[in-house]
Length: 56
Image (cartoon, rainbow, N blue to C red; front, side, top):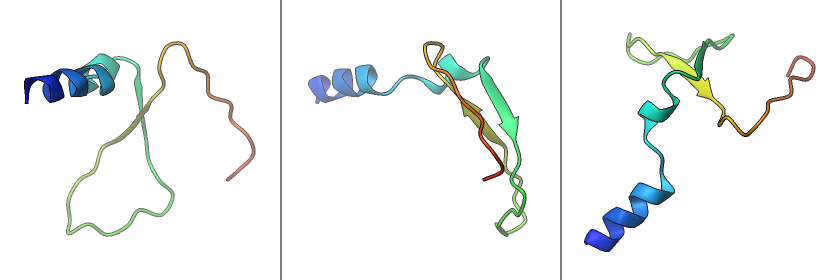
């Protein structure tokens, strides 16, 4: 079990590592979710780039 936990720790970074680099976004046509509020964010690792193309 300990080996599995160590493996998971290395494979999946903590979300708190991306907290400062995340950008909030909203969708054009949100789906109904039982009146819940959603906060959507996107984060890109520092060594990566995002290229924006046309609409869609």
